[in-house]
Picture 1 (cartoon, one colour):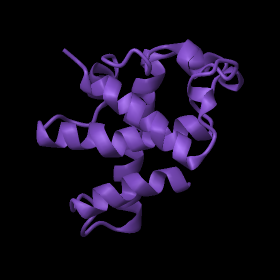
Picture 2 (cartoon, helix red, strand yellow):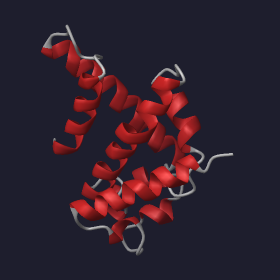
Picture 3 (tube, helix red, strand yellow):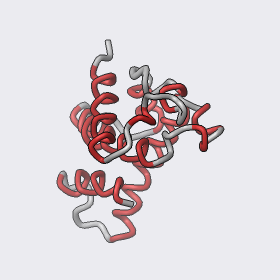
Picture 4 (spheres, helix red, strand yellow):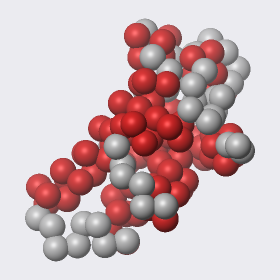
Length: 136
């Protein structure tokens, strides 16, 4: 999946995948993504209960949230020596009113669903990153 490539590149560039077999590298990526998506599901459970009603698990959400992971969460957590666990991701995601708001992700609303191109997905990611950076 193309949206995962950016995460692979970040992990590889910082040496997290060096010396690992393909299976081991896949495990590193899968573990980080699994913890991240479980954290997302815990902060906005309604969007996962009816996935067809929300764009969080569709192309806009996947690309934007993977860029948020690569461009903000992983570097922030790495610099602070924070483990990439579901609980730690959740703690950070809870600071973003957008991330935690099912209405923000609703396919019928003109919010996350309004971003319909790669340029739009990047704008959505930037909006989410800005909301995460404004934590107290």
